[in-house]
Image (cartoon, rainbow, N blue to C red; front, side, top):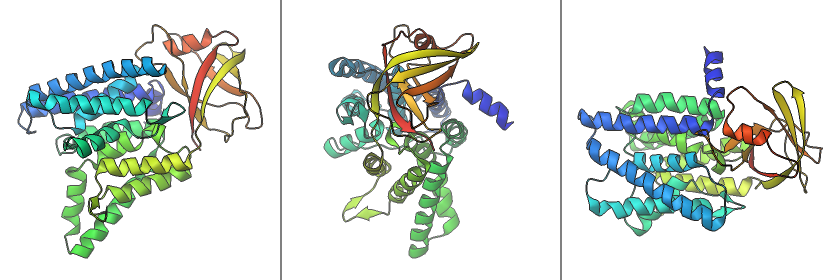
Length: 365
């Protein structure tokens, strides 16, 4: 069973898996609204989602042109759908400027608040924190409710399995649970109802599965991910505060992003192809020249971005394991090609000597 699941997950990209899951959640929300299980109209939910998508697409195109940056359409859609799932659907035109600001701020954070073209903060969390501070509009996290729970749980487990981030998620869950129970015991509250309310009627699961695990804003190693999950878990609990500042899920995540930025190596490379070697009928090794030796551990992987025309629905990014030794000057990857390979792989296979590819976000181990 597990091997069949892994074969399925290996056949789909991480971005595609998350995107499909988020689309299912939005449509499920509309269905539950139609039958009266959610206090929103399906029409307002659809309108808000389409509006967020439109503003995100347009603003991303503008920022990408201004900053001459490679972009991923799937990443744009994912951010817009997350906003649609954590901001209450609007029933009036008066709230559209708020949605537009949230979409623009989320997009802008990827380009402006970045280091070496790697954004520092989770875009959706950054957007709702900024709109809360300056527009007095905050996220409702409406996705955290009982009807949506099964879909959030099943899709989230698939995503975490795909990314191999169970250690991070468990560190977060355990810290949240212990902190909540500690406050409950101190206040004399009943433990079972408190725990049930935490799981069933809060954004805990969605937050952990889709936002906490975002690859570009999490630390690269398992040890650091444990500390990251524990820190965000501690601050996630609403009773935790610093003076008059009470933490919300989005503020907790931004604090964790700062921690990740401080402890994580910042890697963003433009590598030129040095050689391509055929290892098997369907497997090639790509050797890239790197001016500065890359520091990494055996088994770590990087995210590779290869913008190209005719990008298919699987996008222009891939996480690929480094096959070179940390002692080698060159950076090597081994890639297996199947019939019907993605446009990314076809473009990679067609690269000529001296052509460049972007590589960054060293992770794993």
